[in-house]
Length: 110
Length: 113
Image 1 (cartoon, each protein chain N blue to C red):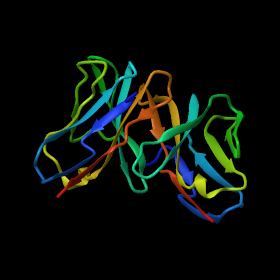
Image 2: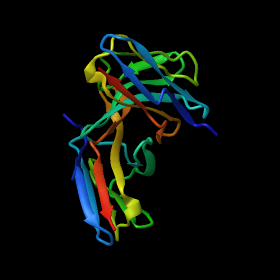
Image 3: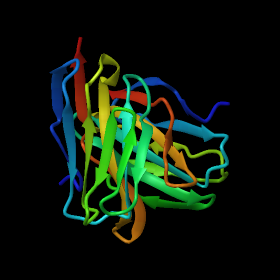
């Protein structure tokens, strides 16, 4: 039972490079979200989706894009990475309000 | 500005002691969740409180939702080294026109043997 799978687990980028963090879930959850976790800041919502074809911005959306073409997948794109995007990223999914998280993706931007 | 303020942010105590972690806001939430996170893993839900004044117990952990649904507390009795971790509160409600879940900064708890 995979639950929520995030890839990659670790990534190092140079400033200006682009990349996509993948999130896949096999729980048939309608709600999917991306958070970033920084020391002393808790988890901050980047983008979220309440179903396929629907996305919306969270607290800190700048510099990130998302799409939701299927129920299962919710990729997070960084078009031009900046050092301020160095963080640990978590994908969370839900059907009942309780969030189920992946193991996280640690991103370093040099 | 953090919508949910947790205190303390760091707490280191000896095994067997009691402790309380607070989660405060000026906003009203429809529910409040507490998560626990271990290093290298995502947060895992401990409990959800929904009704103002509600108290829930999970073994040695007692969770309370404030009467006005703006604050919550987590009390641990006779703390054990296995309680060590990052504790996060999260409030669910209408924020900026949409139903969202927002997190506090977290309380990093260390229980020393």
